[in-house]
Image 1 (cartoon, rainbow, N blue to C red):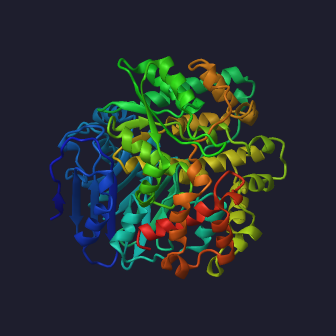
Image 2: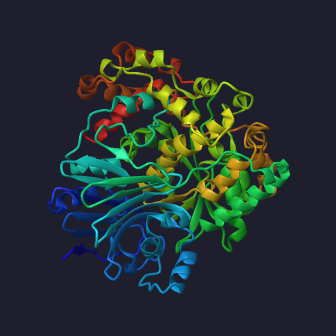
Image 3: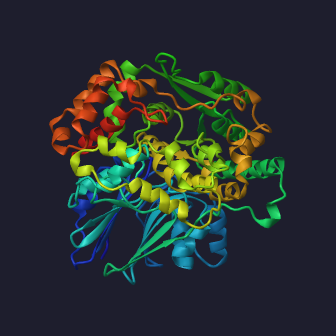
Length: 605
């Protein structure tokens, strides 16, 4: 008989995490490892947990009740009639339409949420059900009859899923630290992943992670695991970066019309919830157009939130003047969250780093972390503008690639943190290896489906770099406070549309040209024609004072010295003059080293 446990729910709207274990050696799954993984994800769902055990398979879940707040939607969800069990993290925005289709085919439902829709859809269409899901998701489905387990991840990798081989079995979880807590895996540093980390501003492309013993399921992937351990992996979605013949004659205004219509659909989909939905409003064009489109659908004042830090020298620490324009224009209930670096940033760094599923060097992690803490006191779901720069060509390295016929060379020069010689000068002896980052770029650019260099760069940034930097950053930092972030620019139909638009219409006019033309129909021009901004956290770019001493303590800790990830002379020079060593994309080399060591120490590695 299976074992199921579902404590009662308080009805709060909190984040989700899933975990599971599959045994191939005939042994039964112990609840100890499952409990350890679930306990490591309490912040993703602190008010409810569930456990399902059936011989050689087990599932654990921490719940977020954004859709269907009742206990009928508790997880793991078991359907005895269909012989299926599921644990799932995410949101399926078209679940009502799918439910109606399934009901017409005779399926009966006992809940009102999206979890059961996935379960029924899997029974009807098998693993191909992912093709019908519009949303963000990671799930595991167990089939009682065969013992087969199917793991799947959404097209753009918005929801994570990590894997760890253990003696006699396989474990999986929504976070890497959860797998580490369960034990039984190698926590050695993967030299290939370290090479990626140091070259791509901490991005480690799937399936690798910084640890040898943990891998991650790539986006748009279905992994089928048979009861005896045999596996099949399928990539079910790839955007094609080519303009079809019937769309070649469209001008930028016609494309802008299509973009606005598609973005309206994406925003409307992400309003599906049984709780209020707010917006993380930076004041840039991306979050501003989202605010405007939500305001079109809202009968009550929309809540918007911005965060800012104090300035350091000429580096301005906030963009409130732009977010205020949008808040006033659309009559939002706006919240400015001001952060004093000495009082809030430095004391919060350890918990921010601990909240990362993988080490993420971007300075604005702490901004999103502190912003999410405050936002979670007011709403439990927000929409965010992440992804627009990658999807619509907003970064400075795209225009030089428009006429580049040489392939990957210019992209590598503009995007990499350092070339291979400089990497070898920075890396400790055990981490010095081949130019894995360069080889990865060559392979990615050679893949079919994008003819021009600029399109290859846009594809790589959208399907790889975006997944393991901006999207993961927002997911991790919001989840740390029980806040669900939804990203309409990563609606897969919008991404497909953007991929078809000629690159000139995207990267021209200073970047995101077609998106800006669409935005002019919705938001004031003051926030469209402004210089491009970033989420500024000057204290982590120009490290000094107490922050420098904190970083020094991390990097001179005995564990860091014993690990020897960095060449001592390289590290000493960065500690001596942090402001003299800034990467081409504006990151601190010292912070890049300290963040990795701090993450490893935070998770007991």
